[in-house]
Image (cartoon, rainbow, N blue to C red; front, side, top):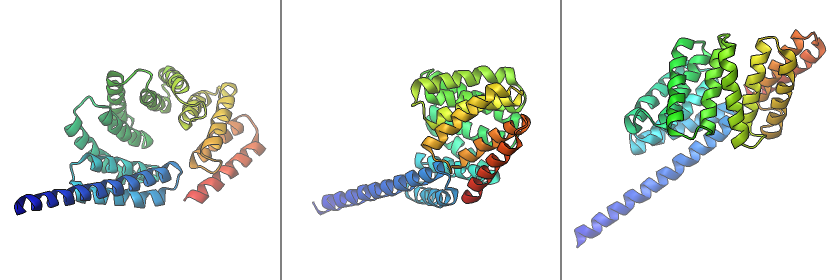
Length: 269
């Protein structure tokens, strides 16, 4: 009888401990990613590192929570331009996820996409492309073809092509991605803004300024209304529009936008 009671007490202690861990980890993760989305990278990093630390200790280095924490911290490092820190985290998470979920899982597709994005931002195109293609193939196999996650992969692969000057390959992917986002998300969703901005960048890169300008304006309006006029993403879009103005001989407008962008970036350093 006493042994049975002792076992029951021990089980309750373990369950309470797991629930406490889970609540703390989820709270830290949610707060970290909220800060990340708002461009507050230093604060996000501290919380994401704490979430990874407690997950590693509480549930072990092979647990899915650890893989999620690795990916989240990698995203924050990447946003800060700390690519050397992000890469091993993404690789470790990818191996863990493929071992746990198999080779055809949307979770793995997300890991592949993260690493591909990291390589693309460093112009490591030959390493990024097969990862993007595999990520997209997994999503198209396992998700609805109109799923926003499919659109994200289309957008990312198109951006890879655009940056290499492969414009004819990029445009239909961008158009398909925008069609999916507009059909499945709120028209003022940041993902819609990003998709519109990508298409504008494609046109700007080819000197199609008349086609690009209204798209840049629309994407900036969405970001201002949803994320705020001082969000880092707004600085990125302002700089793109400033470049368009410069190339079309509008120097005064260029200077105004560049100053606005610099003010935003200075506030988030």
